[in-house]
Length: 166
Image (cartoon, rainbow, N blue to C red; front, side, top):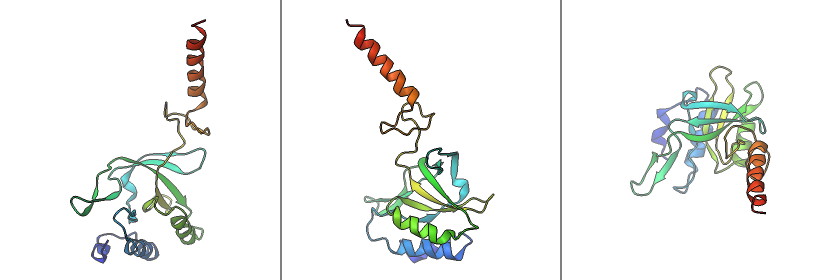
């Protein structure tokens, strides 16, 4: 990433801008995630995750990825599922953000701000968002990523199929 792109955006907070710029200058490999300032209007379908208290959302433009053929960064994952982690602006949020950027290195896409609350947000890769992978409706705590209702229905179905042969 080059310093010439630094003038194309601002968060409105010099410390956040510097943090993002420093992180961008540390990129060594094309596969490294690019931390960027992402306007809040880029998110759709924001929902609170009951288990983690973070939020899931859809990022309209999606993250920057390195295109080895074009030899440049492009956005080819529109409407990407992401996790939003909130930081209360009244607290010492910058240290908390720096800690989490290091903790979740390689899973961070950027930083944003809720214009209604002024809370800062880090945008994380959404490995698993806590909803049932079968029906998508219920929060899940099991390793199979299915809600109890879908697990019960599945067990009933296989039990009926198993017992009907006798």
